[in-house]
Length: 182
Image 1 (spheres, helix red, strand yellow):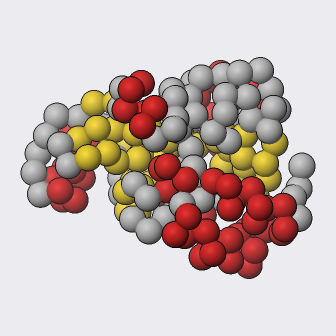
Image 2 (cartoon, helix red, strand yellow):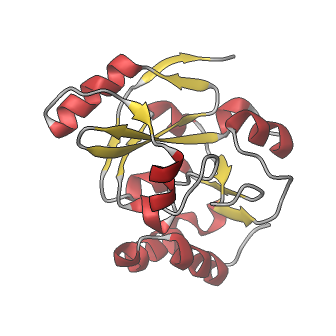
């Protein structure tokens, strides 16, 4: 479904961080209005990247995988393609560069995800509760014209230009990939 600028702005207004709504809406209207699609209730509920790829009928590298990691300094949101895996050693270096120390890395727990109004399988970089986190983006994500990810629900999706991720207030484009599944 292609959305008009008005509908896109209304949808983003519901999911963008309130202090960034005006700026983000302007970006979407001027740069991304023809490159942002939203399809609620599009498929059966899924809670992992592999199932989402299957039900959406896309290739693994087209799915945007967003993973929230808990580190000593707080939470970081990592964005990578669906066929990629995180390298813990590279993430430790990124943490040291951002927060100034080395720490253990782990996935955010269900309880921690719930404090961001999210659950496993619904971590979406455009959600109000996640937009203000530090976003660490794999440069390989930008090899795609569009990426697909959940819409904050287990049965819907958004398709958008990955360049939209660069509009997050705190973002870094860094290599943290260990390997790619073909």
